Length: 121
Length: 121
Image (tube, rainbow over all chains, first blue to last red; front, side, top):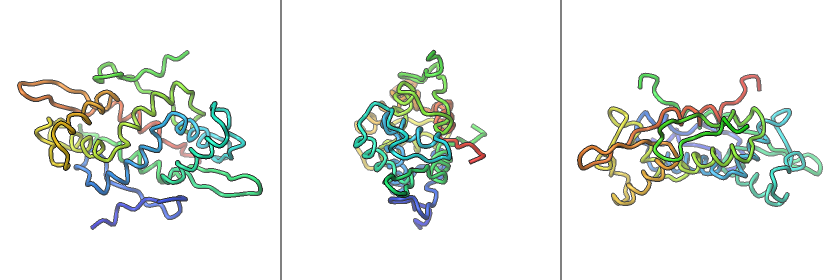
């Protein structure tokens, strides 16, 4: 029944894509809850800049020390990175002093699929 | 300088895609403001269901009368459709008693491009 709705709650391990394309059929309430959480995480300009900073950083990962130039304090950066992680958009790994963040490509791909329109329209 | 940031403020006419892929380079503050507005509009489960209902409706358009089965009142439906329109995700046209809403495909495509990861990663 609802075996296609799984998305990472946190950490991004064991990611399964959520939801059919928005234009395929009306989303169910459950699907919308899951997908809205991801969109909401990117619905803040500072969070979006941080996400972009991680995604575009050398090697596809970054620590707080690498991406502190978006005009907010380091605790604020950490707070937003945590939110992105909770939404399943980033994974993290501690190495020594720093926590390194990495974009979860399968979740991005799932969001991209959600937005795909039928080519016949 | 900033000639690539244009997005519809309302109504969706004259849409120009916003922003490079998130992973290409860190977004500027201006780009992030524009893009976050779109993501935020889809960051609400009811709004996402309504958007999906319009996108998947016959002919790619729907009026409030067609999509009132998401469990909220018609004024609430109208409110959310207005928000989606303000974010440039829907366009609207009044015909007789009803306002018909249609997905703005170029904005969806721009959001999809934002989420694209480099294939070499």
